[in-house]
Image (cartoon, rainbow, N blue to C red; front, top):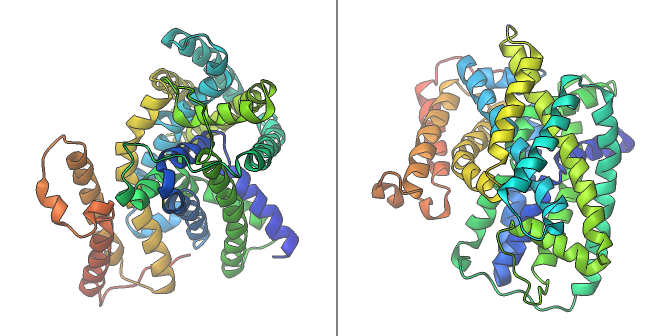
Length: 437
């Protein structure tokens, strides 16, 4: 790939992951982490940027993307795992979050008092628009997205530059009382889960492959190298924005302004835009975020509906659209904070499994291994992730888990993945090796 082609695909990849919803997490982490900011934000970037881009790269090791490579673990796992991912980045969490983020940034700052009724009215209108756009997917949403993503980026960069100059000499905000300094890395790492980009990368990696193939590149090795180069560029851009937003919130002076019941991240972005640009700032930022969320929400509805229509074609595409819009509408009315809180346990189960899968696929690409060396660690990590979430949330006490290596850092799945791979490799030593087509 030429440098120009790498830049073009890199910016396409950046646009896929750069969404309005993800912008609320770095400021919240920067504000609450205080003097532990750098440890927390670098851990956040690792899962919020590094893993998604690694996920895209791993998707290019097979010509058929994850749909084919996951079958090397088991055909049934490929279907179940992708269904779980599409539901997570779709109607269960990501789509409702587009609506609640748009509401918190575009409506709440201009209300005298926030209420469930206002959220209901807004989300009803929001999802009617999303429904109408999703029923006839075409170039309209893509065209709007191509305009709004640059506008959102320009607005955020302007905020970073001007606010950075304004806050440069401000002291660091003290860490929140609830923030554990000794667990700053773990907190940042798990906060990165909330972007959902690592699992979205598994679902959308095929789009990157198609973009590169359209440039006339079909050789598998060239596809992999081109994806790596483009992913590095996108990672640098995303990391720069996330770190900058976190740094601003780490030094913002609220002057005694209370957050109330609004989401901390949306509050901080609105406050900083008002602080830097005056009353016009929140209006402009809110309008851009609103339309960006509509296009993102529509894109997700279309993607999820098309996927489910492909595996269950007897149910028409439009029926899937209506069903997922209704589910998203219902869940969105929990409010942004509740949507995020509800997603944490599910993401804490899915992320270790997704990370295990991605790491094993890339390992076995360079080190041909028997199928059991993939299957055993995935099964073990899946079981451990479920029972760890059950224990950490106090649903069932299983104190023996706390004696596992790295449990305190939420990485107890890593040793099990390594042991599972070795055991599977030894048991399947004389069996055929996994190959990627």
